[in-house]
Image (cartoon, rainbow, N blue to C red; front, side, top):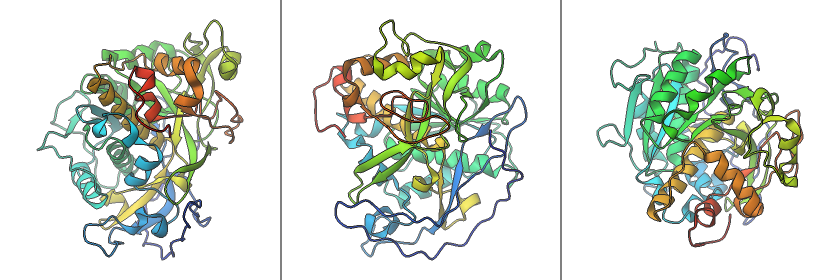
Length: 441
């Protein structure tokens, strides 16, 4: 676990940085001037911390294209600041529009579990949505629901302004990243009273009863007896995703639980059309062989293919399972008014980003399954994605073969990015018996 000491929250003035002009088909250029850092300090025993990183970038919201109602220029290759992404960029890169009949996750509900309260969550999500061209998602419309760890809308946890700003920023990252990948899905924010494992686990159980998929961007080190907690994450038979950590190896918990899908982190590079050029393992991605969780059949089948040899050699549960963008140098813009300032966005990353991104993509896939009358994904999600390896690995996953978190990424499953990055378009059709509807991204 990384110790950052006392975190002082400073609202920085927007940097005057000339945007790099990328040529047609060329990789977007990136600055090296930023100094990313983990935001959350080490948590006390029995408590969790979120795996969120600051990129160090701040940009004004009023950086607009001359055309009316246009996206901010930071969302285009020709105006991209610091190489960070907007929702439309990541929708292109991860191919969410190519998932057959996904309709932005319409009809599905993504549950987000965080600690403490944030009174401006709905307001900030509204500003983010209007700024970046996403559908509005409000409490009144029924799109957004905010509850306490018991599932009640009142009382919500208290959080004196400034006392838990790291969790406030985490809350907005989770909401905005999930909304970016599945803009028509409903969102449920479950706010645990504080960051104790007891309260967060209660919030997870509540969350699995209120939606279709749950994303959690927090955790801590493994501990003896953790397997007795694993049943928490199988409640109500819903897929539960966790971030893998932000300080490299070793494995973290609950991500190591056999009842969750553990999401590691990558460094995402694209060309000026926002098509992936490379995706490599992020050095901060948590991963490794669990010390306590047993080997599982879906990760270590009787006739294990060479693709799964690293997991097979662990002898225990190996993590992560999959991965998505996490490097704060290739992270996303987030609007959190009490942290970034009322007229600015902040650049953030960490595997705190990867988990809600993947939750949004899986919500799209789940909407696709509903549209084609396919059985719904549940807490056996890992069985499904590892079965895809045996069917056609290259079709369903982008294999991340370079990068190092203390372990080296390589061909097939590795302890940095797991199976790699799930291809939404592939998982939205052939894996689930649907008709192939477009190019694999």
